[in-house]
Structures are given as structure tokens and as C-alpha cells.
Length: 562
Image 1: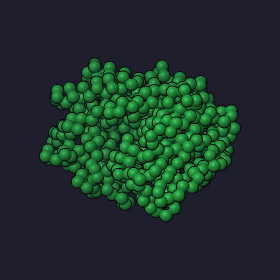
Image 2: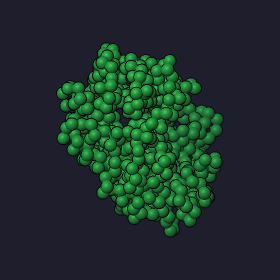
Image 3: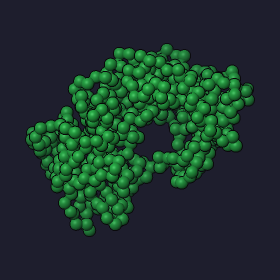
Image 4: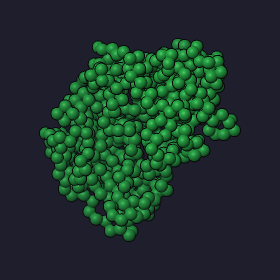
């Protein structure tokens, strides 16, 4: 197993970051980008981001080079000045995303910034307190206390995994380091609550999420590294072992991808950051890059993360297996959320039992080893080309076969589950279901007919079959809904077009019927078994096979509230 000179890697990053430093603003300047919510900035060439600037300041100090010290202090002083320190305001203790946009201009402000920036300030003092000027040190300690107060007031639950951990780190370590027993006690209790919640289910709420499991591992490793308490070390160690077990069990060695389904995800193929993290954590047993070219993140420095030796062999395992996991229970309806993953040497297939089809969800996802490269198949519902949050996936998976349905809700969001509620009405020129094939498109071909589509990836075949499809409105005559092949050069798309035409209003509250039932099968001989469909009061009761089998799921024919 190989090791990496992390100080050398940190110096390389810092040297690259220098060019983006704006000495007038005392912040990093970077091209504008956003996920489309929280910030009201729509168009800008460049911005000055608070989180990235603070990360740069800590990295400058971590180089331990005298010539980097003053710039780090200049940035930290600026960051401290940008915190809301008015206790009468709901945004007390947090920061805005960008220097160019105040907290009052954000929609809404992001309270996570108390955690994101608070943890960097804590680490800066933990590692370098003796280098700080007295006045700046005191100002940073007060900013940390403000962040702790904001975190404790907000008091997120254990279901919000990464923020639950980050907030525990800020309060626990600040409390231990600066003699604040109230913060330390809160941080330990928060960590213990997350531990109980997670261990009861055997999984994080943000289930099998490449970006968020990565963050959980990183932040739990920092707690383990920095805490002085035996109980907090034990709790973080046990959570880390659970997290690494989940990663190793879901890693598909054939495609070198993190098998689905993913409760939260930003891109379907493993990010460069995730690949490099896994390579570093397994000390090169899992290799994506030559060591000298390995991308490195400054936040990894001195974080102490590693994959337990006992789990490393799982990353190269090619045995056939199936994983079923209960990962959430709705507190109001008591509906259970299950995830299923089936893996063979050549492909993996994962699905959720029920999930909204947000662009950060992957409720039906397959990876295929396509001649040493990865090809994926991902189900999406698109409103004018963007994932529609008010579409809901329900599924029942048995090995390589998934029976699944799509219905709609009227109290959900458009592009985000809660930030842009539709009230059940959208303006649209296009609404469609899509099985998107991406990644390596070599040897990918497809054929579609009225009620089915076959996608071939080399010798491996995937079959999509429609069992029920209805989308009926008063003033729109229903055309037959059928699968079509569309290629755009980046992805190979198998689409079922619900509506495409002039931009108009679609009022889901007035729709007479909107429900879809399909099956998706990989590498199977013969046609899939037809499900049993019983028509109840405005709903479809779906069973995998004959009418005596257990109910797979229920689809509402009318859009409903979730």
C-alpha cells in the first residue's frame, strides 16, 4: 500500500489558489456558479465566496510557511467581519455565500454556513493558535461562539446527516478547546443522538450517498482526530465503521462505480473528488490515478481519514450479491423507505421503494462494465429538461428485475423539494420520463416500440416494458404514450413523452388520471412476468405476479399530497 506526501500536495494546491486571491477584498475570486437556490444571483462572471476563502486561509496556515501567514490572517479577519452578529436577527451567527450578496438578499439564507465556516475557524485555532495575533484570536473565538449559538438554536436532527455531524464537531471541539462545557455537552449529545438514530437503521438517512457519505466520513474522522473525550471517540469510530462498510459493500469493482440507489447525489458517475478520496483512504488498493497526478483537496489535510483494513478487500470483490436496507421511516405516515442493490461481476442495479425524483436522487440506477469503462442507466422525470421534484417513484426489486411506477403529487416542488413549491401547477413546453444512458456510450444501441424498449450495451441487454400509462386532462386528447429513442451526443435517451408542444399550464389538481407502471430488467432470458393490477378508488394496487402475492406498491391515479 502506498502513502502520499500530503504536505507536498497541500503546497501545490495553495500555489494554484494564490492566483485567485483578491487583495482588495481579502477573499478568493472565482467564476460564479450555484445550484439555483438560496442565492438570488442569476448572472455574474465572478464572485467572492466566503466558504472557499476560509478554506484557502486554513490551507495557507497549514503550509506553515511564514510568507503565507499574513494573507491567511487578512482573510480570516475579513471572514469574521462578515458574520451576522446581531442577536435580534434570525441569521445571527451565520454568513452569506458570497461577498456580493448579503444575508438579506439571499432567498433564503443558508444556515449551514455556521457549520461550514465554523469548523474551519475551529481548525485554524486548534492547529495554529500560537501564531495568531491576540486581537484576531479573540475575535475568532467570539465568531466560533456565535456559530455555536446559531447551530444550537437551529438544532438540526440526526436525519440531516452531514450537518448533524458538522454541527457536533463545531460545538464539541470548541467546547473542549475553549472551556465551554455547554457547547461540549451539546456537541456530545448531538453526536450520541446521531449514533442512536443511525445504528437503529444500520444506515445514514442520506442513504448510500457518494457526496454525503464522503462528507460524513471526513467530518467524523475530524471528530475522532480532535476530540479529547473517550465517548466521542467511540461514537465517531462506530459511525465511521458503519459508513465505510456501506461504501465498500456498494462499490462495484467491474464498473469502478458506487452502486445505487443514491438518496443524495450531484453527478451519476463518481466525481474526481470521490475517486481520489477512495484511492487515498485505501492507500492505493483502489486506484484511479497515478499517485503523482492524484487530485487533492486541502480539506483532507490532517483530517485522519482511512478505510479500515478489514474492509479494503470488499472494493475488489466481484461476487454476486443483493443488499436490502431499511433506511428511513416517515414519522407521520410510518411508511418505510427501503433500498435494494443487486450486483454481479458485470453490472449493478439499485432502486428505492419510494422517492421523489429530485435531481439529487437516484431512485433507479444501473452501472455496467462496458469494456473496462462505466456506462450508467438512470431514470428521470424531466420538466423542460430539468428533473421534476413532484414526480414520485415507487419500486419493488427482485435481483435484476425492478417493477416500478411513477405518480405525481400536488404539494411538492419543481426543481427542489421545498424551495419552489408548485401548488400543483406548472408552466411547461415539455414533460417526459427518461431512461438516460450515459458514461461510456461505446457499443450502446437501442430499439423502441409502443410499449417497450431494448437497450444493448455490448452483449448485455436491458428491457423497459410499459404495463400501464395514462395522463389524461379535460382539454388535451390523450395520444398513445410510447417509448422513443433520442440521442444528443452526450447521452443515449429512451423517452416516454407525456407532453411536448407550445408552452402552457399543466394543472395537476385537475388531471383526471396520471399514473405509469413499468418494469426494467437487465440480462434476463425471456419476457418479464406481467404484474397484477387491481383498480381501486383512484389508485392502482400493484402486485409483482399473481393476485395472491404481497402488494408491491400502490399508485395513485390522481395526483395527491405526499
